[in-house]
Length: 601
Image (cartoon, rainbow, N blue to C red):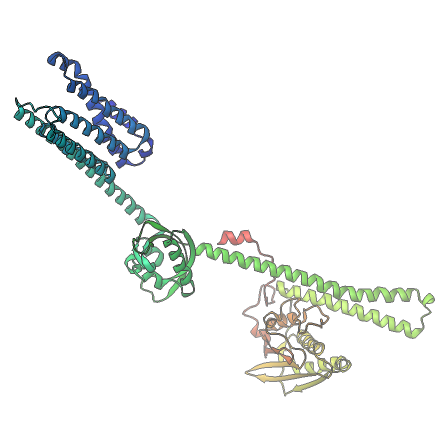
């Protein structure tokens, strides 16, 4: 360990804690404390030797040695308070006082010590404070003026002529040596400041090159003055291309107002956070573009414009596309969950009505038949009640069969048996079956059947399709309405259309037609009975045959539902057949799991 190491450690311990994090400020404090502390101590240590060699000191010599305590006190003042500027002003005042006292006792302004007044502002320049330099200059000028006036009015002692030239040379040489030391100290601080600046630049340059976030600096009107190298990875273009209006041109048109507003608010001193979309080329040299989501946090720089008061803005942008995609996926999951809840509620409400009504009829009429003696029922009444019980049971069976068929089609377990048959006869038979119902409802049923070839399909499923379509058309037609069944060949396919002029379906409900348990509300004052499975089953059966269902409707004017079936349904459905030979026309509505979406996102 060298001799200087303990001294350096001691000086470091005297540096105020407020500047320990700033190497340059710490170096300035050490450069102030060390020479004043050790210089004064060395001079005081030499006092006994000086007294032995000199003898009894004069008044001015006593003052000089007493003054040596002042730099020590000022050094400790800086160590305890950290007030660097105030310490320099006190030091300048103390040095001025010393020079003034010596010059006053040795001839005034012509004294050899007066040259030291020039050193006072030079020493203050090390503080890098304009206030300290001005104060030191004021002290030096005031002292020089006072000495000049005192000498002019004869208030100073007569200058000592003996050895005057030697004393003057001593004053100039000592002042020059001290000024040289100040210059070397200033140069050392300047070099240290430059090295510190270079280190900071290298550190920030390394940080800017390796961080994934884009750092930009914006001037007035949001123009980009600087963009970090990370811009190439985020935007797919070089940082130079984002300069000026380059970044603004890449912001999505709909997000530009929010982007400019955030920069404007930040320029006025308020930190902002905004998300917007920006376009990026897809791959290198590709002509296509994609939009990515960016999060921008912007804040004002410290320096403000002297004319407008606006500040430049620094912004940090990061790609949050993955997070936005995850949010959209979670939103879709919640929407799907809400739809599942609505479907469940609709199912429970529909089933409670469709099952409770016939069950009440069965229980009520069966109790009456059990107590026929008390009710005094004749044969006609018993047959009527038995028929009502049979009708209610048949309705219950139809509801249960519809639910089972729907469940089978959702799971892909619905088996169809293709066979050749004449579709015209099936259509005619279905019209005959429902003719009585149409008559009771006051609806005219019209059938238009062309000469149709035989088709290969499931005859039972085709009949169920026609019965469901005709039942719906009759049910939703007003008294005096008309239902037209049209069968024809079109483009090598069998097309069967069922058209009515009933209540119709609103445009908002059309996309949901064919969903399980959904029944359109065509009017506000009418709620038709039914499970809402009719068209769902039709859609599923048509899909199982490789066909499609089309719906055209206008509220208040009627509805036309058309099914398009291939002539050979068995051949058409082979490509989509699942393991057990059936097709899945649509997926079952399941309640999604948000945790699974988060993991996948």
